[in-house]
Length: 546
Image (cartoon, rainbow, N blue to C red; front, top):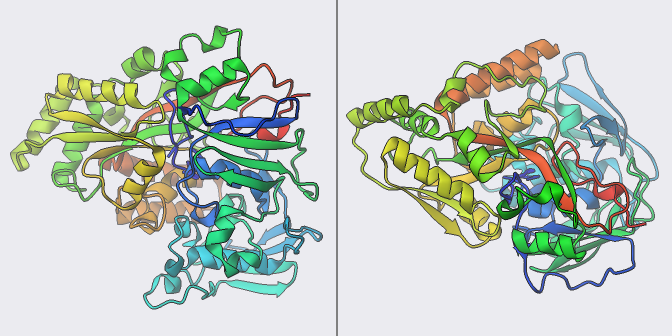
């Protein structure tokens, strides 16, 4: 999403965080003339919020933020981590403290140096509840986090677990062992911020100053965000173009047609109307491979008859079993996805398709009716269950099909509730205004099961402190995730996360539908570098028209 809530595209779309942005073109979408230049034009949705890394957890903002800022580590196309701003990240014996040394010479695009304090102040700002940053929960393992969740804060209090040693060295003390920490810091929420940010965070979000491979040029709201190559960037990316302009679409079919016409260069989704034909379309360059994005829908834990108790669990399991995922993928997505078997993805370390409870994700209409009847015996439910989604992203065919299946296979009153734009949709989720189920999804921020599990379903990420949009809370799940973070061997880590997933497969705080293929199209103007990375996103820095 994640990163990221994804705006969605029927074929799969999400940094952020929750899936990848989708949409289709406004006639006004293209305001910049990039003909003849080596500027890549890329499909996007209007970001939910200003472009501040710690307050960006959906892909409309996540894609530009990811190119404007560099973190301690970066990931290559396959998700392999390498130090970027960091010279070294060194744990103590039990991984409860890390010493971080920075490479010298890094600068922000305003010319000021990137120092240890650029990180410690930024992380503390995001963690501080007074500042209401959407990625706050990513810092919950750092000592002092709980103190920054109290009432009466000013907003400039610092995490006690962060200590600046000198301009290029700082230490991080954690509440518990965390073996994932050295890759977690590659997520943009952990980006450094220049001093100018604190003088006027709102203005900064409209014209961000970063240290990444690109620098900010302009943001014409609801039309485009223009980035240009940063000549002072000294990181791991080898930038092959002169800039990336993200063009905002509210109709993904119009975006596809712009790809065909050469008016848009790349989009990381394929509209439902084109999923049958895009691979043989001579007017585009097609891409479709197994991916890391999961598509789900969430039923809020506060919803009557669907709480995390026996009745609620029975209803959630019944709804999940009443959905024929293979039919959805075959008939609506034309085969461009894989039925979900758990809560991570086939590209995630420790993934399994045979966990206890996986049967709850398999189509079984008779068992679904039986479970629903058991729930009705506890407390009769005669309400209408609505399914909300953003109407600008191509999700309509999926949710029309889901609702029809639930009516036919379970006999319940279900209906869709389209919300016009991704921004309005995410705002309704953020403000806890949803009165039924709503579309969710996840594009990984770093290659670990922890990112799909702890960041989406932990108590720490609920109540607006992270991406737990349904406010699910289960102490047993939390405890297994904490044990996994402290485990020293890969086998132990995987086993513990799998045990945590088995709790989710019973409780179903969200209902997994399918794993989106990394699918998309590029225009014929793109001459080299067109591929997709481990987040199902185009390799923007590598693309060139020359």
